[in-house]
Image (cartoon, rainbow, N blue to C red):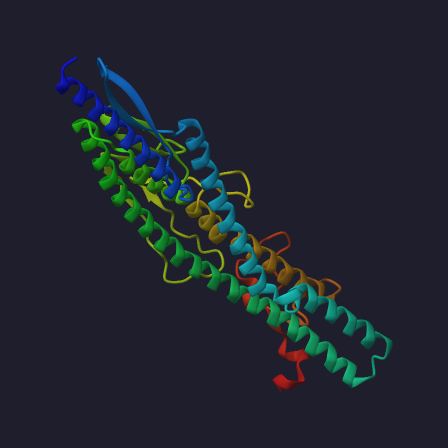
Length: 349
């Protein structure tokens, strides 16, 4: 063996050891980085006595896909439950202090006391005050729900902008991976960056991916709509200026395809966008319908009745008075328009 050959072998061994040490150091330094995939230095012999080191990422595609799915579910549920808590507090107050159910219970108690002494004007005034609090809870609840829907609409618009920004960043990361793959350089860092962006995208909408030649990645939504293929597909949404009861909200479009939110109920959602859409059009709308039905029930229960005469609005009235709302028919926004009949309210003159 010549001296030059021996030196070449020694140099190759030292270089391989240096790369292995560098990989170990990098693994230790980024051990707490959730977006870092551990590197493995694979040593191969290329010639008698010569060695080369190939750096590989220790990533499991199946586990990563499951992680993306879990992120979408977690993000959707988090958006739903935090929104539900906020809505419940806005409508019902702390410990249901301002809820319609509490106000109705107080009205029932006032009526029972008044029934024992009908001649007591103070007890009669207490009934009217309790009825006013019921009306106030329904009116304020309607306002809170529609304000919540408007606020959620603005949050959806912001989230759509964020998703478009992430897709643009993903395009840059994907280009870096493709370029590195074609040139034969180590693309581990570029793959880490691309996967990190993909996890953030999955928080907004559930995704599926597949990889083509040169490590080029394509992203689709769970229902098959293309989200990214070479270039990002446009995600669009037009927010509304405000909401009233019964007003439908605008949907989100991905590449001109409506975003699907159907999971069968209002208690589950995949992705932050679906969660917020369900809050706006499912949870909040359902709560509004419940308040409207409470209002209809109150108007009907306290209606003035007479033989051979149609029932008329009594203690509680509404814009359609003197008639009462039709049985079994939802009147959108009734909880926001119910009021105390002036004929029963001394303060109304």
